Every structure is written in C-alpha cells, then in structure tokens.
Image (cartoon, rainbow, N blue to C red; front, side, top):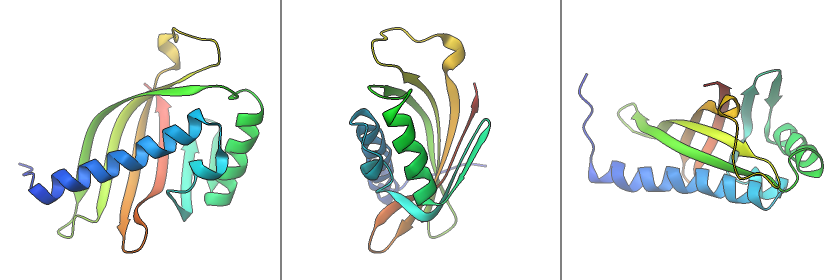
Length: 138
C-alpha cells in the first residue's frame, strides 16, 4: 500500500505532534490536570500491569505518580511514525519509543525504553484528543 501525504496531513501532523508535546510538557511540570487536558473523557491508557479507563482515572494515576516515584521525572520520546486513517483523516496513530528519565538521572537503562502507540481523534471544538495510549516493552 502506498501512502500519500497531503499539505493538510503535514499541518495535521504538526497538530498531532503538538498534542503529544503538550502531554509531555505537563509531565515535566508534574501537572496531572494539564497532562489530561488533551485526553478524551473516555480515553484509555494500557500499560504493563495497569489499565486506566477514562480521563479522570488517568489523571488520578498520574497525580499519584507525580507525588511519588515520578516526581521530578521527564520523558524522552522518539516518534517513529504518524499515520492518518480513513478518508476523512480525522484519526491518527502515532508510534514512538519512549522512556522515563527519573529525577537526578542523565542516562537511562536500555531496558526501560518502551514502544508506545497513541490513537488520536480530530474533534471540532477541541482539536485533536488522545483517545487511547498503550505501551509495552521495546
């Protein structure tokens, strides 16, 4: 299958990447409320050993993390691809490789990197929203 990129896709890709950037900026600020600003109310987050169903549960889990083991941490993220789905191109799948950099760390062990999949939907009033997030061992 050949995928063609239109000028609209280029602008949309920048918008999608800016949503992910905003999520990670909120992580760096340890701000759980800002972290979920770009999540749909019914978003899901699936991680090894954890499933979070809904924006409020995601927010609560991140708030607990930011008060505990994730306090002062940041994210390193390498986006591999951004693909748009369907004729309307109002859905996007982003594949990336990410790791948590804990407070005080400069180097991260290779085994802490994970493969990440984001699903986003373009909505009228809210722009792009994260509808699903998943990560697994790289």
